[in-house]
Image (cartoon, rainbow, N blue to C red; front, side, top):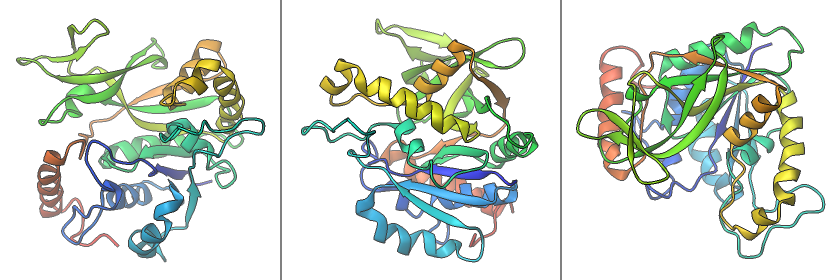
Length: 303
């Protein structure tokens, strides 16, 4: 069974401004998502599922979905603040979405095969899709509890225009993930790559330290775990009190690893990430895509 690509496209793009998911960066107005989908099809993925907000459905269908017709089956799911389990209601003052793992849950009814989760606004590059595509395609039918994460080398994931947030990963001797710690400020500080710790100190990390770029491989049993844990998450009084509390993928993954329920293999990739974390990143991204087109990595027009 061919794996599915699940794109999380409901974010607001707060640091960048506007709907960066729909920003044309390729020579014919291609979005970053278009390149991810092109690479995923090449890597053997058989279906594309988007999680978006209902309020830009029409724009999304017209600008994005129409171009994939005849290339790959596509489905839409919607993330909303009130999409909560029975017995829970959204606080009246909350405006922030419930986070990446809540977005993943929205696809429960349309994804029945092994799947890869990615952000829609990160340029992952082809090797990353080939690595995760092979892992998912090689899983035995009915496989459970064996997941994967593409571990990008931190030196390949920085922005020249400010700090980036990355999940810094540790793994055991078998190459399985042991922890992923979200560091919200990572950059080069006078040469070495460093992250800022809880006390405001810059802590150096090795160039090849694996980091999470939110490129995960799961099987459908992951939805059941997520549903159950989301209820626990919401039942915590402090969750409802904190209007910015989010149900992140690493939160769920860490729980499954710590309990010994699942393993998450860290897959190495030579891919160099780039993207538009900041508005100032835009031109660099346009230039890099054009360079890949000039080198023949991508055709001038994708779809």
